[in-house]
Amino acid sequence: MSASVGEFDLIARWFTRPVKRAALGVGDDCAVLTPRAGFQIAISTDLLVEGRHFLSTVPPQHLGHKSLAVNLSDLAACGAAPLAFTLSLALPRVEESFLDGFSKGLWALAEQHQLDLIGGDTTAGPLTIGITIFGEVPTDGALLRSGAKPGDELWVSGGLGDARLALEWFRDRVSLDEAGLRQARQAMELPEPRVELGQALRGVASSAIDLSDGLLGDLQHVLRRSGVGAVLEEGLIPRSALMARQTPELQRLCVLTGGDDYELLFTAAPLQRSSVLEAAKAARTPVTLIGRIVSEPGLSVVGASGHPVPIEDLRSFDHFVT
Ligand code: ADP
Ligand code: MG
Image (cartoon, rainbow, N blue to C red):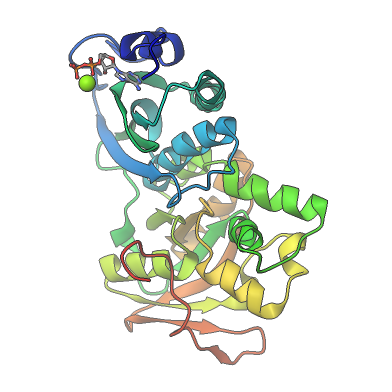
């Protein structure tokens, strides 16, 4: 901590605002939430470490946004409505411009979703951001990874791969023009979590997950938890015009294994198709049918030509496998 701004000044100045929904927020030993009758509390935690989850090139305001966005995306995947979050920060030093930008991005997204910041912890250390988020779902109404059934259709929101395209640019593996780079960086640094869609899909989708590590890997989580398999049609996977201009190999990498998409992948019975489309319309979020669930375990990907796509070499992100 710098000599001028102490830990408690820092919390008071950048991270304390009156709470709107929580019973008690920052300043005591615990925060207090009052669950509504008939609802359950959904909880999710994410840890973001500089150099692992974000590049040092990210503007602080975007980092504040993204730190909360990835947590909101987990609530969205469960169909939960956001309530509150805690923020644990390790900072190498008190840098006012960093804290101004970071807190600005964080509060903007928090207000957009009526979220209270109710507590946290602050320490000196390598830049690390830990957020725990709390949401509410009607009792037993949460969307889970485990509910996919053979015959269900497989859907995804938005478009995939642009965030990975930005990463490939930072790694010097692709060149992009100014507009392309802006779009890709926006996808990487300012994801919009599908909070409204998640809630609209309650009672409609049979399973859901948010795409954080890449389509193939995240889909396999659903398949394993549900004890089913899937056939995915590569040509149906939605992507931006920018992505569609890249080489087929790069598109495959970005779209199938990309990571950092923060779109929702979900399954629904074919009879629910019109309800899915209504939910998407209500949430003003595009959704696309990309495959189907089968009883035989395993995942197969069919290319645009109808031939199987070999996926053994296409791995999603794993922090401990390199
Ligand atoms: P304790 O000693 O009980 O752990 P602290 O002194 O660490 O409490 O924190 C004081 C208050 O400030 C607590 O209410 C805590 O939740 C809150 N707080 C600490 N860091 C943050 C932060 N980064 N954002 C929001 N609230 C924070
Ligand atoms: Mg503490």
